[in-house]
Structures are given as C-alpha cells and as structure tokens.
Amino acid sequence: MEDALSLCDDMVENNIAPDIYTYTILVSGFCRKGEVVPAIILLQKMTDKAMFPTNAAYTCLIQGLIQEGQLKAASYIFDEIIKNSNIVPDTGVYNAMMDGYSRAGMIKKMEKLFFSMKKKGLSPTLQTYNILINGYSKRQLILISFRLYKTMHWRCIVPDKLTYHSLILGLCESSMIDVAVKFLEKMVFEGVIPNNPTFNLLIIKYSEKSRMDTVFKLVTCMKRLKMLPSSDAYEAIISGLNRKGWFHQSYAVLHEMMMEGLCPKPTHYITMINGTCRIGDIRGAFRLRDEMERLGLVPPKVASSAIIRGLCKCGKLEEAILVFADLRRTGILPTVATFTTLMHALIKEAKLDDALCLKDEMEQCSLIVDLVTYNVLITGLCSHGHLDKALKLYEEMQQKFLWPNITTYTVLIDAIKKENKVIEGEKLLDDIHRRGLISLRENVSGIDDELTNTKRRLNMLRHCCK
Image (cartoon, rainbow, N blue to C red; front, side, top):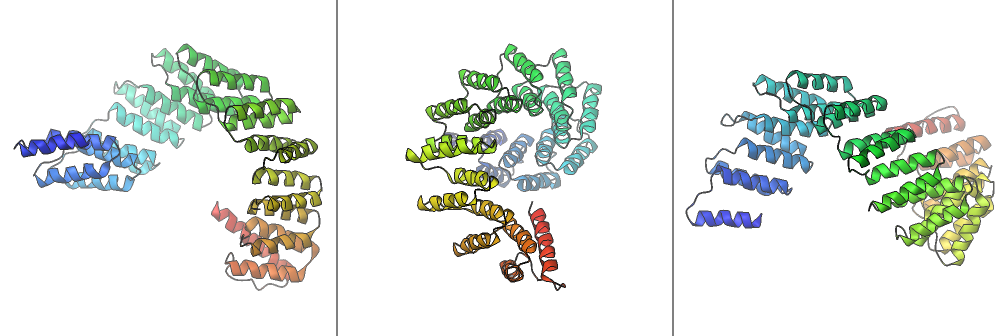
C-alpha cells in the first residue's frame, strides 16, 4: 500500500490529479488490509476536493469497519451516506451494513434495512438473501429462512453454497440434523457441491449425538469430493467414538488425521487417555502419554498429569497415587490442577489427612495453592464433619489475600448451620458484609435464619454473575 500511495503522490507532483476511481482502489486496498483509518482519511480527501466517493468505496469501508469489530462506526458512516443527498447508496452498501447487523445478531436492525432498501426500489441480490438467511438461521428462525429460500426461487435467484450452508446451519441449530442431511442430498441433486464448512458442521453435530455411522458416511462422501474434515471435526469424531467406548477406532482416526497432515491437539489425547483409564486400559493410557510427549504437544508434567486426572475421574485412586509418586521420583513437578484432582479423589475416599498432606507438599514445591484447591479442601472437610479444620483453611486463605468466593461461603454456611455454631456464624456473616457481597445484614429472629437468607442472596448473586 505504501507503493500505491507513493505512486499517487507522484501523480500529484506531475500535475496528474488522481480521479475518483484511483481513490476508490486505494480505499479498497486499505480496507482489505484491515487499515480503516487511512481509508477514512482518503475519503475525507475526496470530499475536500469536491469528489463524491463511490458506492464501492463506501461498501469497502463499511465492510472493513465491521471486520475490525467497529459496528457503531460502520453504522454512523451508513447514516451519513443516507443523509447525504449527493450519494445514492446501492445494494452493495446496504448488504455491507446488513451483514454487520446479521453477524452481531441484531435481526430487527437487519430487517429494517432490508425493508428500507426495497422501499427505495433496490432489488435484493443473491448476497442479500445469503445475509438474511444466515442471520435468521443463526437465531434458529428456520421458518423465515426457508420462506426467503422459496422467495429466491420465485425471483429466479439461484442459491449457492453459502445459501445451503446457512440453511443447514439453521436446521442443525434447531436440532433438525436429519432434515439437514436430507437437505444436503437435495443440494447435491441440484448440482451444488457442498463446501468443507457444511460437511464439518454436520460431522460435528452428528458426533455430538454419537451417531457415528452417519458421521463416517459424511467423511466418506467428503473424501470422494477430495475434501478432508477440519481439525475441529476430527476432534468431534474422536470425542464421539470415545463416548461410545470405541477407543481403538478413535486411535485409528487420530492417526488418520496425522497422516492427512493435521496436527493433533492435546485435547485429542487427553480425551482418549480419560477413556482408556475408564475401561482400565492403563497401558494404553501410558502409550498415549508417551506419544503425546514424543510429538511435543505438551511438556512431560502435563502429559503425566493427564493420566493422573483420568485415573481419578474413573475412581482408580491407587493407580493415580502410584503414577503421582513415580512422577515425583523422576523430579517432574505435577501441575496445580493435578494436585487438586488428586486431593478431590482422596477426599471422596475419606482420606482427608492425605489430602491435607498433598496441600503441604504443594507449598513445599513452591506451587501456589489457589482458590479452587482451597474450595475442594474446605468442601471435603465440611462434608466429613471437620468444620474447625475448614475454618482454619478459610482464615489461612484470607491471610494470603486470597479472597473466598460464593462457593466457599455457601459451603461454610451449610456446615455452620448443621453444627449450630453461633459465634462462627456471626463472624462469617460479618466477613461477608465487610466484603460488600451483601449490602446489609438482615434483622431476623435468629442466626440460623440470617445464615439461610444470606445463602439465598449469595446464590442469587451467583446467578446474576452468570
């Protein structure tokens, strides 16, 4: 773009005035590069020279602003175009603005522009219908999408890949995936070859439902058309197979993915490690861990931590402890998440002292005991009737300037109520009030009622935060 601007400056020096088309090309170039500020400056130069920017220039600018996430600025530019009597916006300008509203889910504004465009005598194009159908489909307004699809046929506008993709997206979002596949067949029958995103969308949706027979039919169809599933689609296939317990097929898909030149993600392996641990195939889990390390997907401590978490999730605590001990013997420091997962598993087996020893070990390793870890320990201690120890951890948190969250407070409230600890209840209520989580302490008949009301208000606050 610097060369283009330099050439434009040379034209001026040689008394050759850049015309409206020269400026339009420059504006378009800047917008395509995502540099909207220089494009706006060029448009201002045009107006200073009594030139009125073309619709193409405005379309590029609006598209550029939307790509940069500046919808308000794009809307302001569009409103200025409408107010300017010297400019008659064309369908391209309207399409650009409607696309912005469609992406932002602002359906009412998109509709308003569409009706305004028609009122001005502008005919909707294929792009117009694609924008509208995509906007409605994302909002699961599938009936309106299909009404527009029928209107396209009535107006002799031939749908393209984007039209069909948007309609299939709408059907999938409306949990009508079987209809979506039928529509895919109709699309092919009409001579429109589906694109990668359409196949990937259907593969992901069917994998989520663990309907793997249909998934593999779609993959076969893709391969016949010289297409390949995306990394996300492969991840969905692997997850779907794992949910059905088909770990050998899952492993085969993982290797097929690598043969196609796609790099697997750590999540692919971690999902499979969890699955193999669940069926008791510990050797298989270790093979996956070693392969994950060999490929350099994660550091050794993360790979081994995945096995420990997988074993803990399926209740194989003894095996998890052995792997953890082996990890420590080799000098590899487990992650905070691994310590926390192991603590949680120990607490479930009522091995509270062992869980607390793990916390001490974390601190000796200079690992920071975070809020999640404290909450796991406090919840475990309270559930096994060790309120005094839980309150000590609560005090320790505050001394470390690690502020408890709503989960911490509600767990302690339940335990204090259960053991009828009035003094501890008063102190906890004062702490909550000082934190500003609840503005005023309620004037009720007793501490038990006040704790109940406080918990209710904290849960309401949690719901609002979501």
